[in-house]
Length: 86
Image: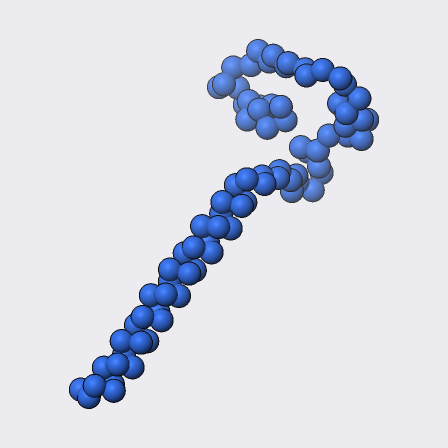
């Protein structure tokens, strides 16, 4: 191999590694920013996990925090739905 060919291969390999590092850093930054600004959305057609307008207005008008206690067995069929709603 000539020195020119070897130099071109070295540069191409270096560019590949630089691109991999940059893409990894961009992925980590997007992941970090996404983790800090977490937003939940209700993707169900019926709006199963969306509060009604009346419920939202009542919650906004409250001046103090509210504690909710639910006595529900974890083995119940609806446990995961109740947990998501709360």
